[in-house]
Amino acid sequence: SFGGKETNHSDSHEPRRPPSFLVVDDEPFNQIVMEKLLALLNVPCDLASSGPEGLECLTQIIHNRQLSYENNGQDDEENLLQQYGGIIVDYDMPFMSGPELIQRIRKLESQHKLP
Image (cartoon, rainbow, N blue to C red; front, side, top):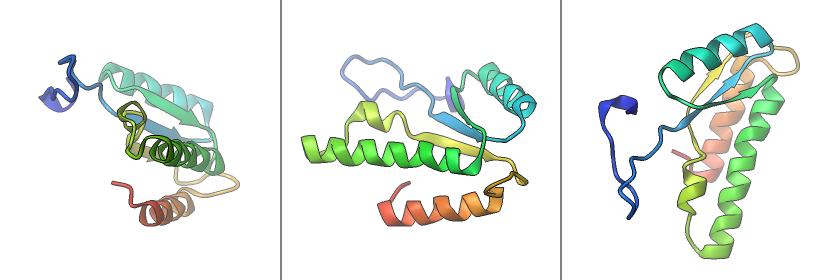
């Protein structure tokens, strides 16, 4: 299991799947390498080919959480499992650099109180 420890979070006593990683890189070869390395660790990942695309992946999760809260009054566990456990970002990308993307992610975290 991820991190060497399984934690039960549901009545079915199934181990919680490891959190996904988001890989943001404009080079397809680098995306493939990172995807394969994470797969060796049984860690799923989503791929984004630019800073704006990576930011969209995160804002979609935030949007889904907000909709779930509005509908249920609480976070939906299935939606919480879609949160990223980590983000791997290329430093030098067109449109939005890695450092700029990280700044925007930090701003989203503070605005939406993300872990």
